[in-house]
Amino acid sequence: MRAFLILIVVLAIALIVGDRVAVAMAQNEIGRKVAADYNLAQQPSVDIGGFPFLTQAVDGNYRDIDIRVGDWSGQGLTVHNLDVTLTNVAAPLSDLLQKRTSNLVAAVATATAVVPYDTVQGFAPSGVESISYSPDGLRVTGTFSVEGIRVPATVIVTVAPTDNGIEVTPVSVQHAAGGPTISLAMLRRALTFTVPLQKLPLGARLTAIQPSAEGLQVTATAHDVRFSNLE
Figure (cartoon, helix red, strand yellow):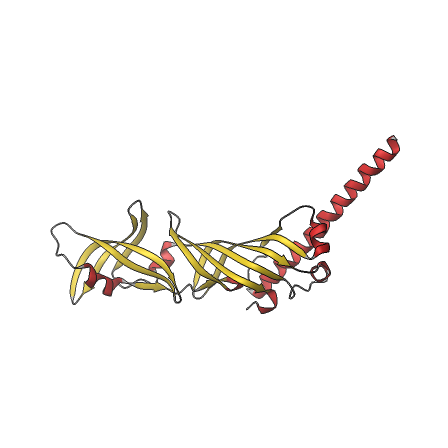
């Protein structure tokens, strides 16, 4: 009986080891594919969720795959902390192990990243001196030219995803003490601008933006993502 129990333990360990080896190979191949297609300086970290891996692999379906890219540059700007989660992924194990990831399909890809405020400021109109987060909202300070008049002010703005990227729109203005006042409508015409981040890797388009102390926390989603269609 003891020998039988030892045999069961040994087999269990072998299965676990084999499972971890297989998942490591699959994760490495997905990371290699993403790094190659997006010209990343470093291969991203990939984590295939669920245990055991081999039962998912035999079925060819995976609950979720997390891809941690870090910094990513595209569309003329750089974002930080880029993470992508693929859910309900279909991919034959034989393809992954033989370095064929083109057949991998995810029902949904959700990407999150941080757009630093110095990047946002790079697309702002002249006169913007700083962009920062505050409890009142996103604050833009500077001296703005409206119909030939230079007006120092602090402006509270909102950010929203559009087809063209992140649209920044003034919603209130705090004039400098003793300085001239200007209407919000005029300031909107002068200060509304767009950061041209239309999508993140895997074709994920912006769906939500939230200001934070670190920068703009952006979320993007895509559906029916096929690795064969990666740019």
